[in-house]
Image (cartoon, rainbow, N blue to C red):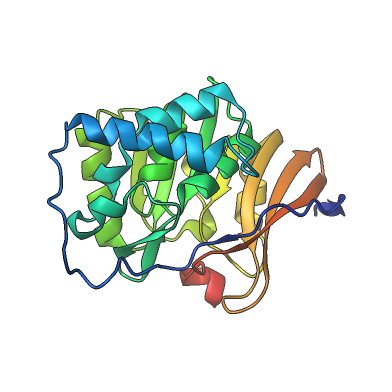
Length: 250
């Protein structure tokens, strides 16, 4: 059995991950081609305005470079592409969302990814978070319970050349035991408790970022560190994520 040691609460800027509507559709602009240089300009603006200025506190240069490089617009539906770099989450179908850029950068930086790390992601969604991690670590293993999303994400990641990302359709509550242990685990959907299998699959000294809380209640993003049979837990951000489904709800 693991003992949970709760550390000091560190409240940070709240982040909502509920879907946002893009507008009424009148006066829509044409979507630029995939290789249009305006997309790079939008990424630069996103980083400058949403991640590194004002109250936004992303400072890790490797994370910033990854956010500048990954083409976020290719990981959202065509109907959402014009809004890909907005400071908000976006719907990606099947009741799921792609997190706002700041939340992706915040969770990535807090996870402290290292070049040699093997990372497990629960909740592939569009594949964007996996792509950002793939720029920073050795391998990413990612699980998505909604099979059509898993298939789409796998296709987009392959098209973008991410050979170090492995996508599986399945219930992330059980993790991916065949590939354990992992140096880090990142969860992008909220269970109401920490799945025991994920703790088991984290190596000694490993880190886990996970939102925990009820679907319609208060949720907290936790940084967890495994040290022998002790799990240190630090609350770092109030959030609103889509719920973890499957066995987590049974």
